[in-house]
Length: 331
Ligand code: AQP
Image (cartoon, helix red, strand yellow):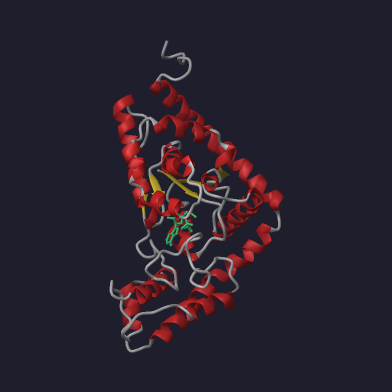
């Protein structure tokens, strides 16, 4: 079983990324061959600063290692180090319908935030499909916001296989049972996000424990007093989801535990639990981040292993599509 997921080196990573994706990445290491990619080429599709991109990339690699990704067990690498990603993206463009890309909600949301809407942001889901299919991936651990992109990846793989012959494994998305969509603490109708969130409503993995407690104390809650999960209580539901994820307990058990308590008690408990959960990660992060050369070495070793798998897939893709010279067994 091969597991693959990608993460963008944009801005500071938040507890949505951590709970929705990184904790699944760590767990995935015990389930199969895990491959995790820092997708820097995706980050160039919107307005960005080149120097900041490099810094953000090291920040992210250090966060992933601090979270528990073990580079001896999994492959951790940078997307731009493996040229096969962009080659496969181009070839998959011919198996992707223009209409499919126009229906992507993330394209609509993100392009609405841009002054210059690049062709790159439109073709983003095809690069994501290439990232995944290049490694003959079985499972893709992601947050709920990636569901539509995952479905597109499956459609593209199936279309390619039926047009050119069985070439790709058709991957499944895996989503955490709780915490697949962590919401902004100040606006619980919107997902917690690097680019679209509010500063006080976004809890960063590397936030100081006191800052984490303060952000939870200030979380927006709902009308009424009852602590219960439900569509009419987006603020309380979000807090319950976060607490359930970090404590690894069920929402029902938490509803029972907080029966009769006030919203203030819940906010304090979640702030405390998240601060404690992230404290060791923050400590490991500080040590790892101080050694950029070490981070580069980890990425270089990962890229070498990733390339070996990617080049094999590309041989099969080129042969299936009749691109390049015929291989010895095709003549
Ligand atoms: N709020 C969230 N709840 C649960 N999971 C989330 N993810 C992102 N936000 C949430 C998951 O984190 C992984 C890495 O995401 P990414 O940074 O590569 O891409 P993203 O979705 O663009 O991240 P952001 O922070 O949401 O940035 P914006 O909104 O600026 O694009 C993915 O598996 C994602 O599902």
